[in-house]
Amino acid sequence: MGKVALITGVTGQDGAYLSEYLIKKGYTVHGIKRRSSMLNTDRIDHLYQDPHDENRNMILHYGDMTDSMNLTRIIGDVQPDEIYNLAAMSHVKVSFDTPEYTANADGIGTLRLLEAVRLLNLTEKSRIYQASTSELYGLVQEIPQKETTPFYPRSPYAVAKLYAYWITVNYREAYGMHASNGILFNHESPLRGETFVTRKVTRAVSRIVLGLQKKVFMGNLSSKRDWGHAKDYVKAMYLILQQDTPDDYVISTGVTTTIRDFIKMSFAEAGITVEFKGEGEKEEGFISAVNEDIFSKVVGAEHLDIFKKRIGESVVGIDPAYFRPTEVDILIGDNTKARTKLGWEPTYDLKSLCQDMMLHDIYLMKKEEYLKNGGYKILNYFE
Ligand code: NAP
Ligand code: F7E
Image (cartoon, rainbow, N blue to C red; front, side, top):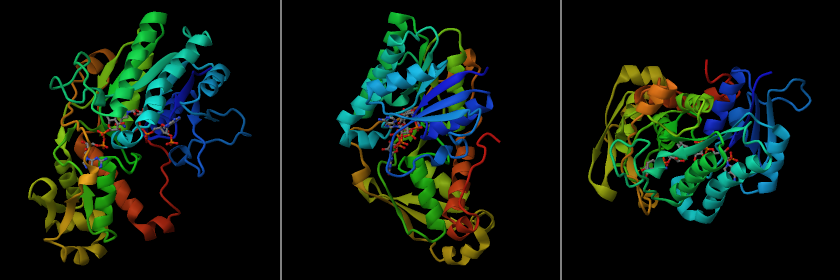
C-alpha cells in the first residue's frame, strides 16, 4: 500500500506540482479545495479522476482553512501519513487589503490543522509540512538569510505566516509531532498566479511582442528576489517529510536579481533589448534593439516587421498603485542546510526558469494557435 497524503491548497501552483510528484511516487493524494462559483481546478485537471472510477489516487474534498470542523472531519476520514499545508491567501500586496482574513486563513488556519491532528490522536501517524516563507525575513537582519536569521515580517501576510511558523514549532516541541517548516524563497513557474511579478511580466511581454498590448505598468523595480522553479521546490517539501526527525529548512537558489533585470531577461528571451531610463515614478523601459533570428524563432517571423517599427517605444512604465506600504527590499537565501541534510539542490537557474515561463506564455497568447489546438494543456509536469 502506498502512502496517503493530504494537501491543502491543492488547486494552487505548488499544490498542482506536488500532487503530480506524489502520485508518480505511488501516493494516494487527497486535496482540499474551496468551493468557487467557477471551476478552479485548471492546474490539476490532468490528475482528476471521476468519483466513479475504481482505485482512485487523486481525491478532492471541499474545505476551507477557516473552518475547523470541516478540517477535523476531513483529516479524520483520510487518516493521512503526510499533510502538506499549502493553503493560504498568498499575495503580499492583497494582504494589506484583507489583513484580518489573511490572519485567519494563513495564521489560525495552521493552528486548526495542527490541533485537529492532535485531537484525532494522529500525532504519531501524520507528519506535517508547513509552507513557511522568506517573507518572514522582511526587513532583513542578515545577508544571506539562513535558518538562524532573526525574522522581521513586513506585511499582514508575513505576520500571519510568522504565527504559523511558531505554532508549528510549538506543536513539535509540546506534543512531539513530526511538524516541519519549509522556509521557501520565491518560486515561480508557468503555473504561477497571474498577479505575482514574474508571471505578470512574462504574460505582458508575450502580449507586447504579439501586438496584443502596448505597455505594462509595474511597481518597485529595484527590489531583489531569490527566484527558483516550483518544480524543484515541491521536491524539497517531500524530502523534508522523509527525514527521521522534523526540522526547519531554507529552500532557495542563493542568487538574487532585481525586478528590472527580470523584465530585461524576459524581453531578451524573445530577442528584444529593453533599456531603462529615468528614476522613481518616471522610470520607463524602451525597446532599443531586436535580434531578428531569436525573435523569428521564438515569436514568429510573421510578427517581425510590425514589431521592428516599435523600436524606441516605451513598453514599461511605473504605476505607484503597485507600491507596498512596507517593502521587502532584498531576499537571498543560504541553502547549505538543505543541500547537506536533505541532499536537495535546485536544477533550474533564473534563465531556464524565465525561458520556461516565456515559452509557455507566448504559446498561450498566440490566440489562433491556442484555439486551433483546443487550449494549452500540460499533460505531465515532470516529463
Ligand atoms: P497559490 O498558488 O496562491 O495557492 C494557494 C492555494 O491556497 C490555492 O489552492 C487556494 O485556493 C488555497 N486557499 C487560499 N485560501 C484558502 C482557504 N481559506 N481555505 C482553503 N484553501 C485556500 O500559492 P503557491 O504559490 O502555490 O504557494 C503555496 C503555499 O506556499 C502558500 O501557503 C504560500 O503562502 C506559500 N509560499 C509560497 C511561495 C512562492 O513563492 N510561491 C514561497 C513561500 C511560501 P484557490 O485556488 O481557490 O484560490
Ligand atoms: O512580488 C515587486 C514587489 O508579488 C515580488 C508570494 O508567493 O513570494 C511571493 O511574495 C516583488 C516585490 O512576490 C510589481 O513590490 C514590482 O518586491 O511576485 P511578488 P512576493 O511579494 O515576494 C513569497 C516568498 C511568498 O511567500 C508569497 O506568498 O516584486 N513588484 N512591481 C511587483 N509585484 C507585483 N506582484 N506586481 C507588480 O506589478
